[in-house]
Length: 384
Image 1 (cartoon, rainbow, N blue to C red):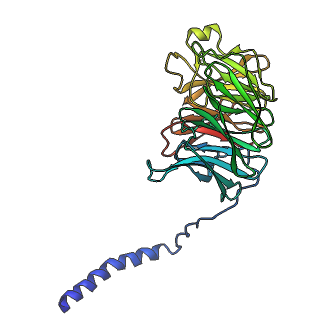
Image 2 (image 1 turned 30 degrees about the vertical axis):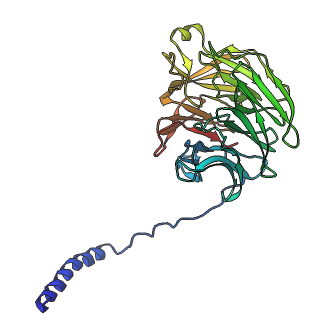
Image 3 (image 1 turned 180 degrees about the horizontal axis):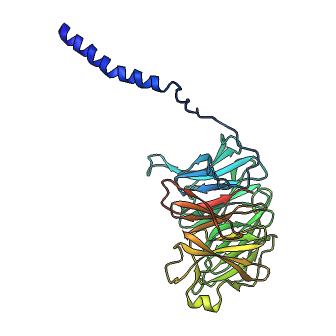
């Protein structure tokens, strides 16, 4: 490089820098520093305006659905068909998950991760042997607590069906129970579970202190699988679990005690609405509130094969009088619903890639939240 070249280079740099210096002089107040990331503890008891959103194999978020800030309060790792349980008797969260050693192939490991409820630090892990955990899009019935929360019950499907009984105190699998011809698990009594069977019955199993079976009873046939089968989604209202049917009935089942009681069913859809082919539809299609009201996603012009499509309305029923008390028209068709708890509950509706939040009293859309990168079905679990 010659001396002349060096002179021209310095001159060129000076010509570029001098306007920047002049521009800086025009703005004597510098921009504020960007906030640094902070690690905070979550409250010991989560507010009722928070809800876990299970993105079905992508991630599990804890979001503030009750405030306009729309904040993501925390995020849990999740892989294939992850399912979530949040304890209210111990400061722990449990996530059942599955991974493969080579990403989508290789050695399979099923496990439950135990998280601290305030820090989300991992407290422990329980391996589920045999590679049997049912891998189904996140939904009700894949894993549940027993009533006393001593055990978690995990549904297995290989396609042989069984249940793994996991002792959450000892952090180990205490038992495996075959349930041939039956699917999914729902808590029954203080320490038991029930499962829906292909014979149209409900099999109920009681567990002892060690997780072994101490009682087993099958109900009468009540689920007409060939003509009007029940959805597997349910909601608990006043201690009774309600299962809608494909054609518009609802089946109450009292699972509060060790003796399960299949109660008389009743119609959700009257004659005029049946003529317009109104039917329940969606994914997490039913919810209950603390005022003993039942909410059901409904779809007009329904027909064979549309039972998982989003619905355009949510109908509200008084379970005591068995009558519809309200119809809420949705701003966008929704697939999954849930209700927050407390004095002023909110109705949460997954509508495609958005979570819409409604005031169930008047039906107004309060706020809408983006669900970034979400393209499948959502499971919603509000906090108590």
